[in-house]
Length: 320
Image (cartoon, rainbow, N blue to C red; front, side):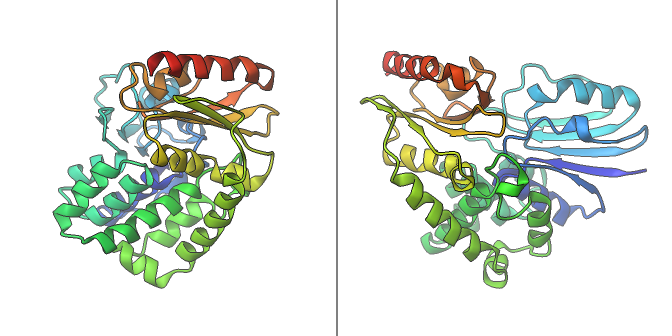
């Protein structure tokens, strides 16, 4: 019997797996990738009798592969917080999926484990830009503001590390980063003991300074579009920039575009909670997905950039 851990390489996926394997240790083959690389189940070479744990990848992008694995005789446990049109009923599937606002996979795993490693759930929630959830979990641990700030910055750095066209764009490959995290039951010990956090913090700051020098392509009171250059630093910082802009003005929608290896654009979207359709609904117009306030598009055709920008500005002007 073989085991596989399949997880999103962002902060939420990493911290969800960290909690689970601290509580339930087992040797497993890791299947992961950059944040946008979310159709991961099709890569798993599982056979009848094997077991797979899936963390923080959307069921909508993995439904066919999941069905094939279940039919083959593979057992699957699935933790996620993304939109799932239909969750199959199958005796070999255990699904813990909650797409409600404020949910993140790290928090779902924390509940599942009865709060065994909540500090790592705080890191994951902060990294997933679920601040209210992170603060609620931190309050349960009695963490003061200074301690929360350490976990917030760690979560944001782990999340920053997941953005890129390929793993070559990243400071750390997600599988490597997980192996560095795993020995530490306490994230504060990780921060004190490893060079990972300060290295990511330095690079993120440098990348962000580059990004903040870029002016909006189009801008209004309700929405703005930014286009970053075709550089590794831009691919790394695209999500962090979208979060930074949205944190400064959460009444406004943002689209941040960066060129990808296909000659098109990867897009990070942020939108106010008051918008009727949400960032995810808009992203699905272009083959993307995500959550109400944060979503993305993996491959926006370059030839469609002008139409996309007009559509984005009109949509969020109307919603505003």
